[in-house]
Length: 506
Image (cartoon, rainbow, N blue to C red):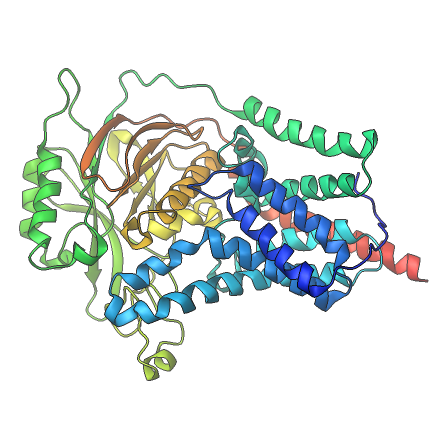
């Protein structure tokens, strides 16, 4: 159990405290892909819980939390500079501001949690756990949310990530914070009793993850899906001299025969914005795609307008070349696909990176399913939408498959694409559903409902991959509950702690 009234320890001077907090944050950042050093990440997290009681007062604690967040987000989200470097002359100057702004802004959520816990007279570590878990929940929803790099994601390379199928990513974040607090408390007063608690907690997370991993599925006779990966670098993707080359590359991959003895694809998936024309002008392009597909339906990423509004869309072409269904992306990227306060930023000549009109793209109506015939119903996720567990949970009914198309060329060639893939994989585990992922530059992958990669194309490689579509796995607890239980638990636990402290102060 966490000590409910730990005594304050001797404070550290700021010249030591802030660099330590920053360093612990960087250490925690090494748990993110492509480093995947979860044990170092956990060590950094334990370190900040050790440092927190040495940061007396709300303002001092807030500074410690902010410095820790700056180190964590600054390293793990270093990929945020990549979109600004696509057109260095136009937007390159924004790159350092983008990194510092994003890392420093997200760190404010953690600073607020540390500030609240730092003002407490008793129960320092339990309050920090609760407030920090609440901050991560808020970070996932406030201002459209940005739950990239949640604390619980440090377990993604390990079996412990399977717990998201029961308690979700927010629940795993709460459990991780509890474990780190117990470990920090044990380090402060090591004994057989104090060391046993975090040790047993770690064993429970890992062993429980093994037990929760669903069995391997028999994929014999399952329909084949072909994932297309053209590998068009972002600075070349819209070059008029290269557009025909990239388009023809995808057509050739679509028409390619299957491996000897293998069945032809029952579905072909192109990535986000793969068709280089607007939907209403794409008739000849669709005819070419349909001929290459030889009767198989094709999912393509494409842009469309309704006269005044622009949409980042997904279209399903039937075997005759007709557009059977259209889905419009609804969860847009701020400053990338639309500009908050567009009129204000226009005064400073600052435009969204992907804006096609003054306000960028318009949002679609929300999560919806598309019918893939014999393959079942799919929940489309365009790029960034796979980051949001709550959006997947809001589907009108349980789909048979998650379908993500994305253009990760924006994220560069180092950490961003791998982190995006990892979070999409977590969505599959949360829901117990297979995931089809077609990415422009990679990583394109077929992932089953237990998070196993059935087949994949490496980052930065042009090609296609044929893979059997796994059936849906078990109906998970999280797919029924979503994040609501954790919101209620955090509110209840905070109220209980507040009540206890009020009684002690009388």
